[in-house]
Image 1 (tube, rainbow, N blue to C red):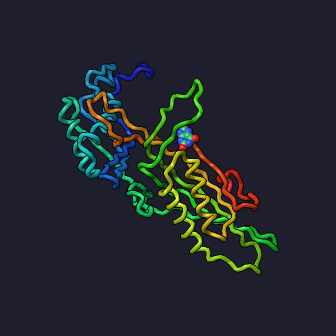
Image 2 (image 1 turned 60 degrees about the vertical axis):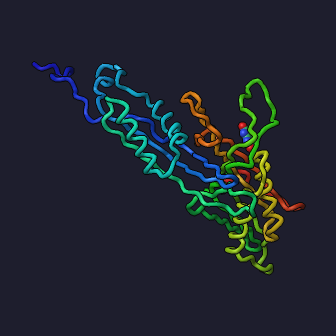
Image 3 (image 1 turned 120 degrees about the horizontal axis):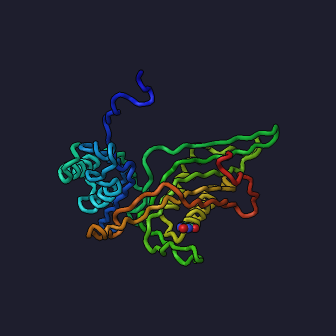
Length: 306
Ligand SMILES: O=c1[nH]c(=O)c2[nH]c(=O)[nH]c2[nH]1
């Protein structure tokens, strides 16, 4: 009788690979006041003589995935990021030629493209992520009056300088170092409410209004020397209220997309505000309404309900 609980032969290890996935690396190259961004999502996958770690748990052939992550950041500094392909070639060659048990390295890279925002000559350090944001509209009619709220989501912007954050409250849980030159990045969700409410009133040109509002918002982001994202938010709202008479109320929800300087000192490299880790969570979430003086706030506080 065969004992069905114990296979006759032990299971055999099949294809296997390992590495660190989704290393978010942002490299800023500073050419005077003109900054250039490379923004990559790099996934490293290594394979080779890795039977033992699976069969017995011996790590003797295992280069830690943590090391592969560090290598990505160190290479961004040491070799720069000329192109995703060139960067991937450097990394793959390094892993295969420096570690005998590693026979194959697969490097997958997503690159996020950024365009410059025109900021009236205040330096070339403001960017909007390529790819169209989503435009939104909500129209309500009760038979006599109208309410039109327009807006957008997923408009991602970055300033690679002209942002500080210091002078905040410190309690026993505060560890955040004060920042005098940081990256400020956010993905804008915004809504604005029109004061057009009756058929007798002249209707705004909705498309022109959207384009102009978007431009004001972007320019205010780019031109504000920021001491906090809260201050930048208020400037963005104010710019719209001051320039678009058809709009009485603006509400923004701005995730603070943190970029942390990577400590390259353990590898003998100096990080001169060049190589950042782009964290996706947790994120600060800064939300506020900006109103025309005398007007009522009617846009819901929680924009995800709109
Ligand atoms: O612009 C910011 N506002 C904050 O309220 C805040 N809090 C924090 O930790 N970082 C930041 N940045």
